[in-house]
Length: 139
Image (cartoon, one colour):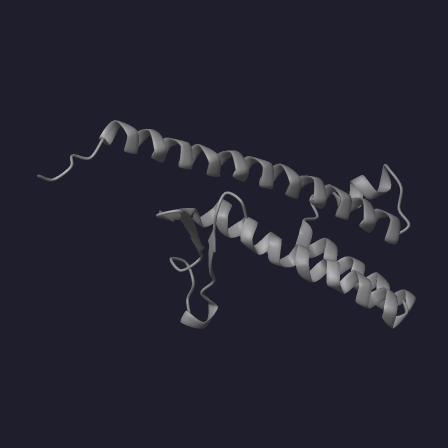
């Protein structure tokens, strides 16, 4: 005789799994906004601007643009190769996280068992531009 599936337990475990993901997503989004605010502070300092001028000129600058502006300042000020390399490591990591964040928030996720798939597949115009990453609530 086949054992019957306890659907009540299955639904409860599924709800726990989904809740865990959404809690982690909220923490991720909050931490990213803190990182983006810090990056904006770095941009203001690098540009040698203070309030209210920095707010007037640089409000609305997001991660990719801030990184670009800081790199342009580094070039204009002729930062040392070591200093540029240190910042580049940070910018590379932050850029990857920014792409993941944008893909999650703009294109959503699909659940497959214990992991979630984040992809831009539905909106790319060429297959070479498809990004896909598998994440869990822990990651």
